[in-house]
Length: 208
Ligand SMILES: [Zn+2]
Image (cartoon, rainbow, N blue to C red):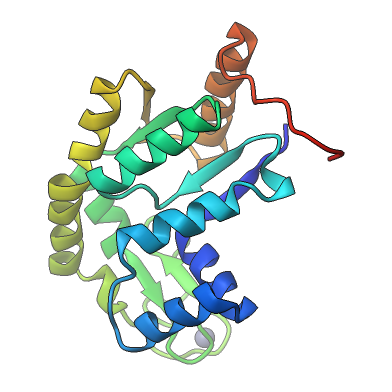
């Protein structure tokens, strides 16, 4: 099964690198520390999903994050007759906090460690260069709690929107299991939907 993985962050960076009109606009906003407005992100997503690598399907990662983005996306997919599925990865917040607050990084060579699953040989020292490991600002418990609160406030309503809009929403338990096992579970859900016939993609005009 092939499909494009679209991360909004990567998409924005690629667009900036392309140097076209929209890319230049995004670069200006990002360099002045401003958020890229919904309308612009929506236009970029619409452009992106028309690229040939999306003809066999695609995964949107990090989008939509707000209800207005979700409304636009749903309308866009309906207009293009593209079937969709929402995958909601459910992880207990205490587990998320434990995983993230256990992350350490080497300030010298950038190597990443997890005290739970990939601890350094010598406590708090980098295996490669011996530097004292640090906790990134992003991984401090108060920062993580703030991000989870923002998620509750902004992103849970997105899920409610899709449920009420009759979009297929699947909850996936991501508390245990390796990333590979969780991804296999998601692939099985998609295959099941495809077999049901309603996740068929529109016929593409022209050669692919
Ligand atoms: Zn190091």
